[in-house]
Image (cartoon, rainbow over all chains, first blue to last red; front, side):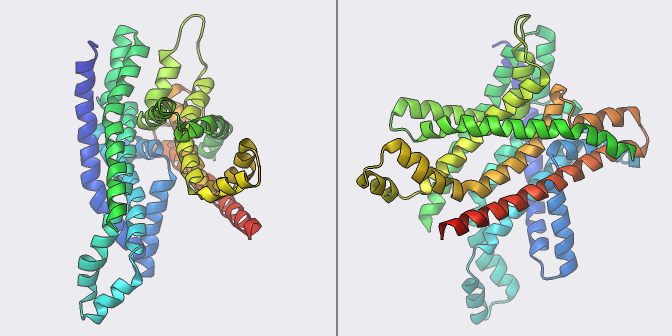
Length: 210
Length: 213
């Protein structure tokens, strides 16, 4: 139990990281989804490559590429900036696919109805299609965010003082690895389990709304 | 060429960890998914908690518990054992949830029909219900396996000498720009490995669909 205060300091760092990842990742995901759906061949191809590479590589590999790779090209990032950048890319690629699926799930008739009513395509998209499509993506995005929060533990490998790193240091000092890691796991679970339950609840509510 | 060869040295362990832990998970998930559907409330709640914990605790924490936490002079897991057990149990949690969702999609009438035909419950489950569920969730399982393949990279943190571990060792020794090439190759190899899995899953899905009609 004496480990808990230090672990909570680490948790705060982890939560900061995930907050930054969401703040950067979600707008980026929306842009990537639009790029992939673009009628312009080149834009769509570029978007597809960014998304497929970002989803195809393990988050850990992306993290190492950013943290160990970029400095060799003269671009030095702090370890926290590296983990935020790497996770944001990975996260936004997964989210962009969820967003794209959500937008595509809106029936074509809605677009045609907008057209028939004389709405500009941009307005139809932003005011008619996007709100309906995005509502259904909320549970999926929440689930993805919970996974991304768990991925912040990867930052331990590049010595960011987040929850996992704190646990490792405490273990090294006290040699009570089992106790410290189990406690760290429970701290993670204390965030992820309620989040999962809320996600399930939101999913049920959105499904019944239709 | 050397950076690519370095990564390829890690390929066997990447495959062993991902395929091995998938098998462990696929087996353990069977009782767990049944537990998620049982009418015995305490058992169901326990299974639900186990599944949620397996899915809610980061992989790296779980691996460290197994590798560094459980260690006494008499009993200690090797890195590979810890990776197989750790990733295997986590997979069990995710796969149990996938199995459960699949079983749920099989209409109730199928149970009632088999009962009406006098088919015993275990046979009805394994010969009638489960095959239909498998058909529905096989693409989801393939997607999970591709994710598992990528997550096997986390085994490098408990010193399993798979692709990322090899890349890391090389990068530490070579501080030039080409020192990061193994990471690039490893990343591309993960993408290259997931393509045939996705293709196999698609053709399996098509075959299963055809066999019904």
